[in-house]
Image 1 (cartoon, one colour):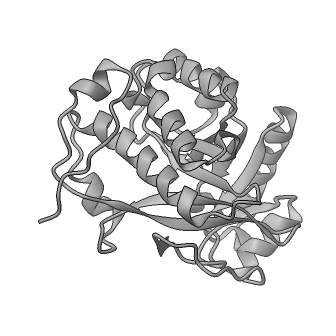
Image 2 (image 1 turned 180 degrees about the vertical axis):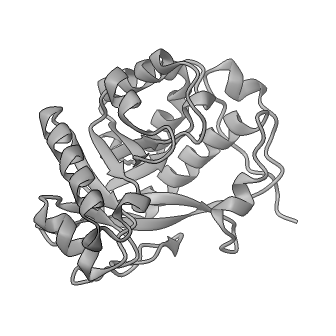
Length: 256
């Protein structure tokens, strides 16, 4: 049986008092590409079991009492692996998912991430924090404070799964992140859907007005890529280019 994950002592009471994690996990890395530059923009760290088990199998073990420790442990694991795997001389970004409801005090809860980045020599300006919520956020003002603090510290911020569930216009009305990632359900079948193309056009107009960069995630076909690129999107993520690789950086096909 794997030993429980150990984490650095965190700066807020939620992380100090949370229940220890009785399971182990690791990260797989999935590239985000800049199609125009034909280059790797960054990699998203995705939770996996130590033998490649799905994210769902890990997340199903995270209850409310464990979410604080789990959120911190994910950040530490992602940064540690990025420090080992990412090119030292490039500005390749690391994208980390986080749970806003697992952050008591933004300035305190970020300390472990800052300490880990310093320890492994990873520039914090290369770190992007992206968030999404399956349930409506109870306190959007608190989330706005998190975003403001992270941006003040030089992190990149993003809304994941934009257009799905509650990750939508109501969030942007309260705060603006540096990027938004368009949900794959909007992208799926976009080549043959005038409605999806019209919605995408509206999102792009809004994003440009707010100075927000778009990432199209979940791209799986050449037809999807063509429509998205012609609309003016440069950043992409999806199985068309590569599949996530466990504790390593996968080979990327820019041609799809």
